[in-house]
Length: 348
Ligand code: TYM
Image (tube, rainbow, N blue to C red; front, side, top):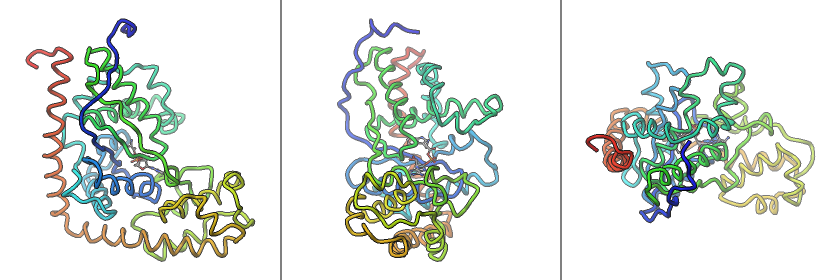
């Protein structure tokens, strides 16, 4: 290990602000992805230079059917655009089309410490009892994520709460690189944008489990491609308790399922949970659920419809992805060239 005490400081990055984030093409997108990530992308594109990619290199850390992967990539691109991302404003691209991600990832593999990766809880969850049979890629996955972010010198990363630890690792890698290669302020120390009631959407069947693509019950999640009828049925069947909604956030916090539904309402309506309680305290789920179903259908059904429309014309999506990849390469290449120089590679 290098002795960091004798190295120069991490430094302060003074370049422009930039947003970067991505979603894996490894299954249907759900309400958690929408509220935790997609909605934020759409909002940020109006404020900051925004890069949003489809994380296909990350997806293959677990088996993906080669015959389906390209179509899954188009589906994520369609979801981005259907939720309001404008390809003329934001750069939308497939990760594997920009080789700088993989190249920087290798260099970061040599910066990150084994002990840092050993602490990653998502690897422990995903590898389960069969750690030795997991791919090496699944283990080093967060290092690739750091490369995704830092190859664009992104300063802001909108994600759901489950990505917090990966973002902390990214910050550590950026700091150690700046330190070790005597380049104070070379990489920004990016800020995760996690806040808001949609940052951790829970399963509709179990308020203690995260809403997830891999949950075997389709009733646990609302998919972006669900029809209006599906959405209403899932909200109606969502697990709750028999009590009316409480007055305070403290009382709500003790009731996981109620808390989740109020959080979903708040995120969909662009309100704080306290504002939702101000309207519904004392009312039962017989009143609250129909209002939530109506709001969810109103917001999500048109997204699903737009997605289906976009997927009907794959050539248009492919053209958007190809143009995005070109712009992304232009942005990533100079960073990698500078990194190679700093590392001291021949010819850099
Ligand atoms: P992924 O594909 O698992 O999820 C995509 C985004 O959705 C968020 N999310 C949720 N938010 C709220 N509630 C939930 N139940 C929920 N489930 C998922 C995730 O936090 C994420 O923001 N490692 C990333 C992809 C990635 C990435 C990156 C993200 C690769 N490189 C660089 C940001 C920057 C992932 O697997 O997300």
